[in-house]
Amino acid sequence: MRRALGLHRVQVPWNASQRWPYASRVCRYTGHTLAKFIVTLATGITTGIFAVGLGYFVSLLTHFKLDMLQETMTGPGMGPEAEEVEASFGRTVAAFFKFWLFGSGLVTIATAMVRLTCCAQCPCFTPLL
Image 1 (tube, rainbow, N blue to C red):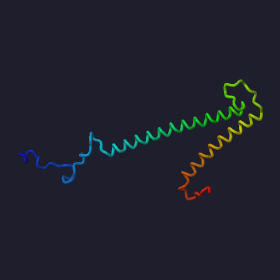
Image 2: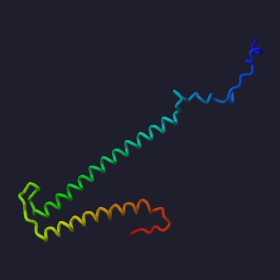
Image 3: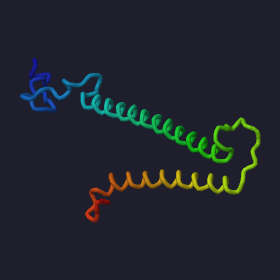
Image 4: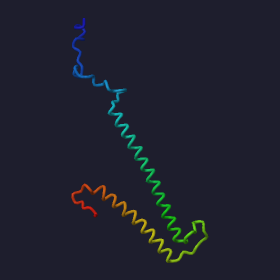
């Protein structure tokens, strides 16, 4: 009867001596898919942690810079709630140079960090030392 129904010629899409190819899948997902998901999740969490830390650090630097400039313009010991103080030309110039030095220092540090990490593989790289 099997021959009459054609059941003796059952074809399988894989070699019968090998393991069934779908044995390691759960709901059509493999362990490789789970590993990709975990790596993607860990990368996202790490990126978020660094973004929050960078935002906090930038706000600290901004507050420090503004406090430094406020102290330069109004004098030592007087905060933003102090009465109006007439800023002299010398204080304005000093505040401008402090602002300029602070910004230039940050740009210089960022440029040096990029140069050290990015250009070390370049054939034309020469150390700064």
